[in-house]
Length: 175
Ligand SMILES: [Zn+2]
Image (cartoon, rainbow, N blue to C red; front, side, top):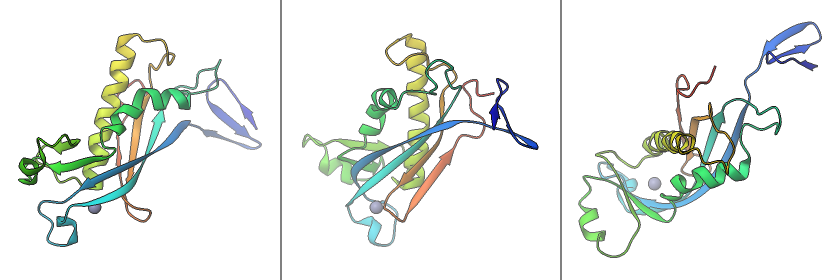
């Protein structure tokens, strides 16, 4: 197997295009309820969720990395941490009025139910916003993150149930 500079891998008799990505998983403990749900999920309850992110971008020829895993945690961990040990609610949920003012971490989704689907999309946008801000700030601690973006967020509410949000076409220079 020969990896050429053009990103094509020659495996004996045929060539395949490759696109490298990295994945990282963050654990998140959170409480939520679904305002409009007619079943059990209407009750306030908690989950030990896992957020799997997929980041694409060029592999730095010197480091051999898209990004250092510890830098991914440093740059993006704070965004996912917003949900950790927080109560996540639909902004229309009257429960917010009862819970506010008690020094609780509360995250409101703008007229959206805090489902795995909506949380995956909520995170996808915020994570890429964070990357854009990081690149624009010129901070050098995490190296050059130009061209990196989070293309997928898989939000696993439980071990068996997950939803994914995928960016169709990476907006940050992903050839
Ligand atoms: Zn739930």
